[in-house]
Image 1: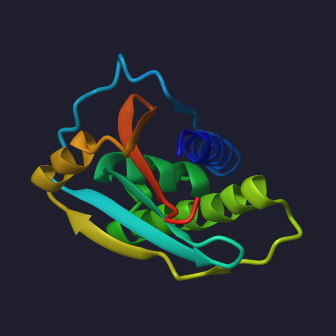
Image 2: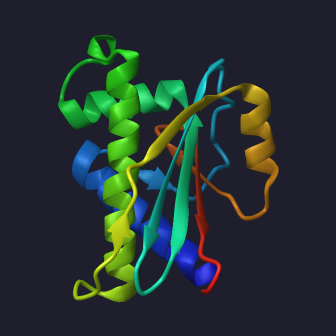
Length: 152
């Protein structure tokens, strides 16, 4: 599982840098406690040579930052639908990169449309406490990644 998590972290970091010009860091010592009341959670499943699901969760504020950076606009120009779409697209592209990094470009996978939900602070805290969720920082804010691959 640790190898899968390492590949997921690197895939996420690469996509975030290429699409949003932002950087993910595993050093969470200086991470800021989110003040958001709203958090986003998105998941995508894949099937093919291997099956699984990738889940992202993050405070709304960092999702707005990511969307603004992806679109090249100021954060005050980002409304909720744009932030949600950018978060789902980041997950979608990260999943594709993860699968290519894991299995190579020759393997074919079917991906679901990324799901999206809003979660509250209590749900966020529960996710953070799960040992198989990976905490990263982006712009000093927390982002959670999770990979489920039952047959890996």
